[in-house]
Image 1 (cartoon, rainbow, N blue to C red):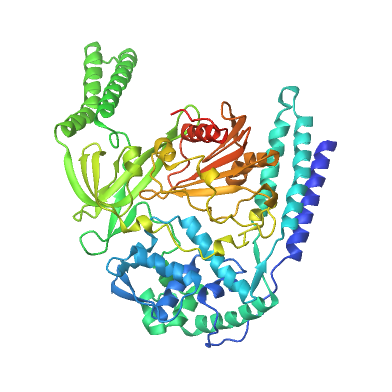
Image 2: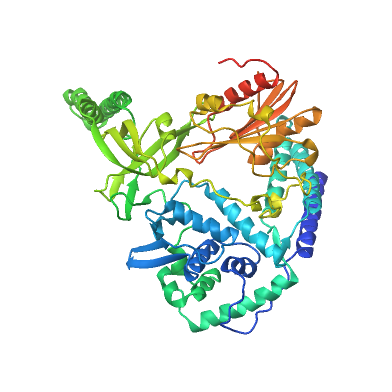
Length: 619
C-alpha cells in the first residue's frame, strides 16, 4: 500500500509543477475593444493567431486567400451553386512569406491560371510540412511585430521531462510490488507507459503565448469581430462575395464568422479519398471514387482463380456439413446432401473464376488522368510488418463515379496524381496489368516550396515539441557533407525502396539532438511519383552513439534491436540507426504511404554500415 501512496504523491507533485509552470506562462488577458469597422494593418492570418489564444487555426489559410483576392492577387468567381473558380493575377504589392506560400500553392494547381475552389485540397504536397511552414511564417511575423513569443524554454521542458521520470518510476515500483510473483516484470512496462502518458499530457499545452502588445491588439480585433457579427450576415456569404465585401470578408473568416467561405476554400484540409477534383477534358468537375472490398476485386487473375477455388472448397465443405446435421435433425434427404454441396461449391467458385478468365482473354485499355493514388493497409505479416493495397483511380472524362483499381507497388511508386496515363486493366477484377505515363502531372513539383528560413524558427506547437536537448542557435548545416551522402546513394534507394531520387541535398530542418553532437545530414527527395524523402544522418566518436535514439525521438515509439548490422542497430517505423567502429548513422524514410518494409530499411543500413567501415557493400 505504501508504494501506491508514494506513486500517487509523486504524480500529484508533478501535476502541481505542471500547473504552476502553465499558470506562470499563461497568455495575458484580452479586454475586447469597442465595436468598430476600421481595420488595422495586421493580416487576417495574424488576427487568427492572436484572437485564437495564440493557436493558429485552419481558417487562417482560407482567410489569407480571401485577403489575396481582396488585394487583387487572385480573383474568385462563382460559376454555379457547386462550382467556383480561382483565377491567378499578378500581385500588385509584395507578398509576405505565408501569402506567397498560399499563392504558390494555387499556382501549382491551376490550369491556364484557373483552379476550382474545391480542388485546393489537391496536389502532391506534404500537407503536414506545408502547414508547419505556414504556421511558422505567421509566427515569425507576429514575433517581429511584438505580438507573440515562445511560451516554453528548453529549461522548463527539460525540468518537466526529467521530473516525469519520478512518478513513472514510482508507478512501476508500485505495480511490481503489488503484482503476483509471476508478473513482477510488469512494473517496467507500467513505468514506460506512465512516462509516455505524462509527456503526452505536456503536448496539450500551447507552445506560443501573447505579449502585452499582442493582447492590446487582439482586444482591438475583438471589437472588429463584435461589429462584423452584429452588422453583417457573413456566415452564409460565399467566397466570391469578397468582390463585394473586400477585406472585411477575409477578416470575418479569420475571426470565425464566415463559415461558408472558409469551407469552400480547403487549402489546409487533406484531400478527400472518395471525392476528387479533375480538369481532365478541359472543365473542372468532381469524380466520386469507390474502393471496393477485395473479395473479388483488386487482385491479379491467377490469385483470383486460386481464391475462387478455395472459396468453392470452403463453401462445399460447410454445405456438406450442414447437410449432415440437417439429415440427422430435420430428416433432410440423404440423396441431396452431396449434390447441394457440389452445387454450392461450383457456384461460389464460378463467379471469380469466370471474371478472371474473361479478363485474361481480353484486357481493357483505358486512357485518362489519375485522380487518386492511395496505399491502404490491409493487414500485416507474421513480423508485424504492414501490408498495403495500392490503389489508382482514373478519370476517363466520361464517368463521374469510378472504381479504383489495384496495382503492383513498383508501378504505383512511379505514378503521381494528375498524371495522364494509358492503362491496360482487368476491368472485371480491378487489376492494372500495364500502365504508361503519357503526360507528367504538373503536381509533381508542387511539394517543393521556398521555406525562406522560417522552418528553422524555434516555434514548437506545444510543450511536448520543445527540443529538450537542443541548444538555442542550433541550425542545420549548410551544404551537403560528402561523407554522409556517400553512405546511401540514389542507386541504393532505387534498389531497396523502388524510388527514383535526385542527388543528395542539404537537410532543411532542425534535429532534436544536442548541439555538441555535430550531426552531418543530407536529404534525398523523389523526382516523381509519391513525394518520398530519405534523410541520412551521421556522427563520429563515442558521443555519436546518441543517434541510436533518434528513431525514438522522431517516432515516439519503442524500437527493436537488429543483429548483424554494424556493432548494433535499432529499428523503428521508417527509421533505422546503427553503430559502427567508425561512427553512428541513422536513416529516416518518410512517405505518405507509410513506413517502408523493415527488410528494405535493414538493407539500406547494411549498405551504409559497410561504407562507413570502408568495406564494399554486398549487392
